[in-house]
Image 1 (cartoon, rainbow, N blue to C red):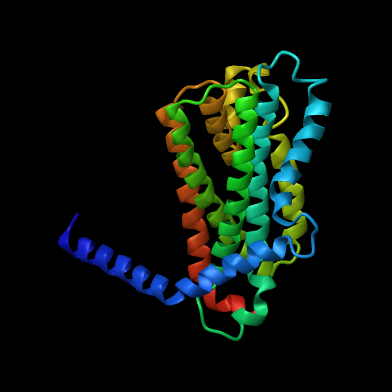
Image 2 (cartoon, rainbow, N blue to C red):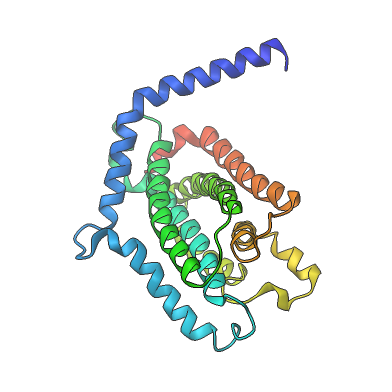
Length: 270
């Protein structure tokens, strides 16, 4: 690395540190607000973050075991892993899409980084995901799957998925400001993506060529990583690691570019 590039990187890191210190309290308050708002006026409150996925799993187990699960070992965990990852992706990106418009009253009056609203939604979604992940591990233990040190590698797809969700959220939130139809189009897209993510059916029913094509779906790549670790007890190949990282950094790069390009125009459309 050249000296000028090193100085530029140091300057960038210092500016990020200063900005974080400046808005740290605000960011924490936004996360608390978003998390509390989701369960406001509900009787069970935060319990819904675990009860909701559990009820979904029960319905899926009753329906899909009759069609696809008879020959698939640990089919409940197979479905749970897929639903866990996909639900986190869908909730975080949907929340990210609404982040700017839902806070338009603040964004248009106070000068502050707009991405803080998006990040707060994603952190709130991450908290829900972690709570559901605890329930997932309980099911894993009940199903007789042994825990092993390789489970620690699940940190990698979670981080990649977090970055990917932020990137997609940046893209969607900007599009939603300009085009309100984005919300309805995205609902259709996520429904299609759900069926292409092999949540309910085993991918080994297809040829190896088709199985590789599934990896073109970023959400499936993260689901696949989870299943390899938990169900098969094997470390994913370097190619799977590269694919997961590529999707995460690619989405973040595109989202950041859109935000940088249209940052000031966003306010005029709110």
